Length: 612
Ligand SMILES: Cc1ncc(C[n+]2csc(CCOP(=O)(O)OP(=O)(O)O)c2C)c(N)n1
Ligand SMILES: [Mg+2]
Image (tube, rainbow, N blue to C red; front, side):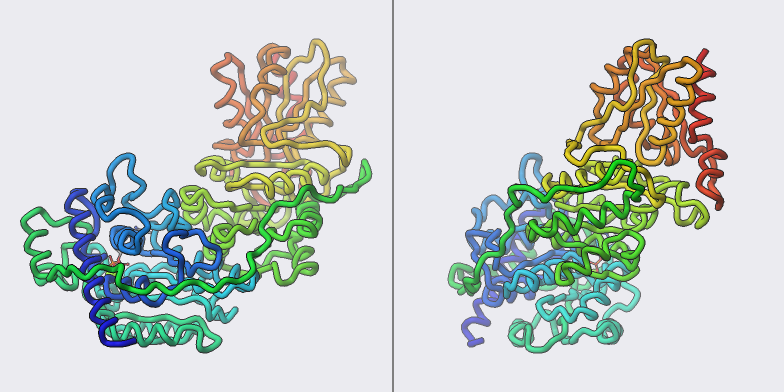
């Protein structure tokens, strides 16, 4: 890097500082000091090092940048404005209603791949992108800017571990080690040797530098990709750097400057007229585009009626079947692949499978990274273990990620393993995710068809699968659109409509047979699409059965199928009776548990008879 470039970058860094102050002062809120510590690193990255087409942020071989410390959003916006993507004046719309320059970055903006702001997720996303680059044979790098307070999050170390294991030398983390967090100093302050040791232990190449020395930053960046390890740059910085009354001061986190303070700060920052336009942003290499088109169709499924197949196994079969023709499909698992059956996919397509080991938070965000690179990532583990990645899933909702989650071993029907292994909250939590689709097949055919739907629809989809084998009840050519339901029993004079899904569907069918022998008819609906729910089908059926619905589910009573049905139908004056798991489960045989917790055929019969 030649001297004039260094001077230019210094000027740009200060310009980014000035924009960050002006924008947060205009907004009356925001985190200017968190921007100021990162300004020199941002200038060096965006105006001379990273290779990207500034007019086309989505270009497939652009270097990626993730602002994991999302509260420093103003400096990210300033960098892209200075790079020429949008007018500088727009920066003053920061945080205003209607502006896409939100308080923390969201993918409403073309240069933001994933939402950040819930700290601790950026490095995992970056690892997913780095893996996607490798798969697509593209040479872009992924840069992640982390806060020093932020890396107290365990999920960052899950990501650091995985990146080390897979030797992701196309992943570069920069720690903005400004000594301070929000309410106090970080645990290690400026003892950056602590971070160096930790990253080193996770298999990273570590460079510790003065994060305000542009020359040093540029030099260390010139070594990116030179060996086979991921690179972390630990940049010793000062929060509020460049402004005397802000620099290294506590109690300035998340506070904008008032107009006078802003004027004083800007006077100190020596405004430069040197435009960033003078900087040469290196162009990305022109490499062949990856094939990320959806296929025209998928090969057919082939089960025989009465075959006994667990839906979790059908999930594994489906992944292989659709993976044959859909190159976008990748799979991730957290050391449960022989239980979730994702191992079938791994055996067939090893390069498209990522073992994430037992680190579910990281696994979900790695998948989000794949999704942001036009892949269709299927993540599998036991349904119950997704709970520990709930924040990652929540933020994926904000990112409008293309993320496919498959939770196996749902409910008490896992039997002997006991309550710690039973997913009994998953429907509730997945229903509550912004824009989610929640699916719960009963048999192998419907499970396979729903996996197809998941691959074809963009967004977050959750598939709930079961451990026990269940008989195939649907024909191979039957279709299962999202938002649909199957009417399996219906007759004139039916006493009630029973809405079930998954293992309880079979209990409902058994109950219907038993009641039929006693001359009582019931309508039985397979609500395989929990969200969106087939409300019209269920309401129309209920209106023919005394406006009475019984829901039966292998899930806690809160937030599951029963609540979904009640939420849609109660306004139509329909009475909903919920059969669900109402108390703390325990180990036992499946039949024993279904009976004990009142969600088996006998419980349904009893409920129907109690209706009078
Ligand atoms: C998961 C999570 N916990 C807490 C917060 C609230 N919060 C926002 S910024 C911040 C301090 C971050 O410190 P650091 O990572 O050092 O960033 P800096 O502002 O110093 O660059 C906290 C606690 C958050 N956004 N996300
Ligand atoms: Mg900090």
